Length: 104
Image (cartoon, rainbow, N blue to C red; front, side):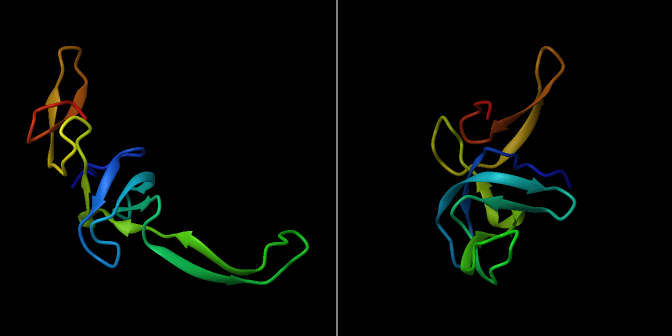
């Protein structure tokens, strides 16, 4: 199944501890069907100081979330929407919002 979420999309989280939050997609991993969303799904990592990296302590970092738990926000209508693909006149495939029909 193709991944319908791309980098720089604004998405809504549908399930989990961060349910209802919106964020921008920073990175997509299509082989694992996951994506990293800005400000969502933080995990803590404990690190020691080293010569190469002087940061130590507890660092918070966004971790991947499964794309089935995300829904794209349409930039025109501002609502979470399903997407479909349409061929344009120049032969490119574009994603469109199923609610308002606008190109995402």
